[in-house]
Image (cartoon, rainbow over all chains, first blue to last red):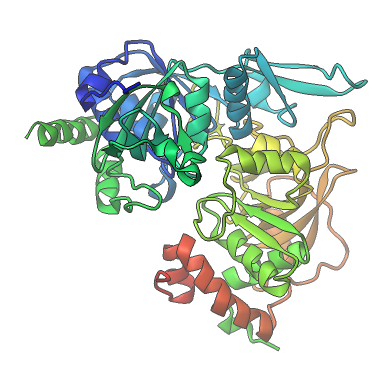
Length: 271
Length: 249
């Protein structure tokens, strides 16, 4: 069965207000071009989930007013420092913050992947993270005496949103060792994917490549986007554009600077 | 004996941390940790047949193939022997705060977040806390937000926990029974009195506190040679600043 092929705007149009979307961290494969198209549509009230942490995508979505809830283990711009629009939004309480920890997010997605209501996880007990989450419960281990363990409620995103180096016409998407994208795709109701290149052949025909490939079964729609992760890089592909990222961080210190930066990006895209 | 004038503070820290990692089978290093990363690489250089190092974010020093969850699954099974955690605040019970200062719903300052700390701190036997700013602002009596607690009730599953805290001024060991730090050594150029003044929490102090040893010539050669080169792949800016190295080709 052929995949649904759209352009970036068509892909972005599939994200309604209030959608719950899972996003990868900056060192993985981020669909930055698609995120800019979602911002340009003016989508509201998104619930974004960092798998397990967030970076530039989240800072831009938050700064643009697209986000109601942030569920993540961290928001960081790595060597570029603290995420300025995220920090401002938390301080002014304009977003709902669900602070988590990396393995709990993986565990919640794994529960959704299996279609079970929760996943137990070691650790976390006694932290303020645990005290502040009503979707996490400390319960007894049913197989042992006096052994409390954390139950993390399943996390089922409406969409996994990510980029990939390669996809095929059947919607099979190669992610290699970045298998948190596979977990996201399995857990989400559907995935919206951009790829550097979409080929005619079938990626599953080659067993070596099939091992790192998400089957088209999980992919709702696909768009080709050369340099789709820019200004971030992709492992094994191109490096991040450090000068552009530094320019963003500088401009995004203020709300006005951020607006100017994003206006410039939509002007560039229109040209 | 090496002359302390020729040795950088980072090199003393790298050597001191490597001592605590000596001979361990698997050391994992999180993001943005050049000094612990270098210490792990030094430990590996000393026992290449025995010690594996996983550095998150590195392509050459990372053998995981099952996505972001694999590190945590490994830790849960006891396959990781040492890990490093920082903290915007660290308190005398070794609680760490990576989230915010003030009311977390209306914070004065917001940091990136807890990452995997609330889990790795419970599952990895030897967690070394690393914080380069040693002041009453960072080493506090009580953290504003517990990203991960230093100690747990006896019935909570916890093979892991804090082992030591190293700062730019000194090294503390952590006594898990007492739930307290003990001053273990003071880095050259710093004093016991200064540590007391700059630390916001109470800790134990032996009558004689040794100086943190300077790395010997062989250790320095390893740090400045193979370790610096391997580090440049992951932390080019740090390798350039501390060792004058360009990014490895």
